[in-house]
Image: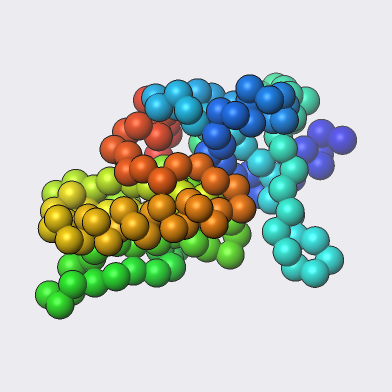
Length: 189
């Protein structure tokens, strides 16, 4: 069994979840509270079903025990897997006439769009003047530069509320500072 658990590391991904999952006891997996306490970071093993659709298996305490007994930094491995799966950092964008970004949407087929807001070192390079993040749905992450005009901000807020209202796994219609949703000791290398 431990060989299979070790092999699962290649498919380990971080997943941001809403705290209501924890409060309702629907989420019986290791997790870590985020600075914005309405959310937590957890981890899942990603598989594809017979039709090629993404399926998740929650990480268990047994998996964590095996990884830690083997001296494996499994949290770091999840970050590496997320980085590898994020060669294309976002899937959609809106640009101004000058080519600067109004918003960038991370809506990848793997369903880890919201998790990609954890990749702040990469996002910092694209948005050196700062940015906000949004997670209207668990599978969607949105990055918005801080320099939006009032009109652009209103358009963006309307977009967020629309995504949130139609979300299959609703998270929030609000903008957050990136540090609100990243654990203090998150490992990037």
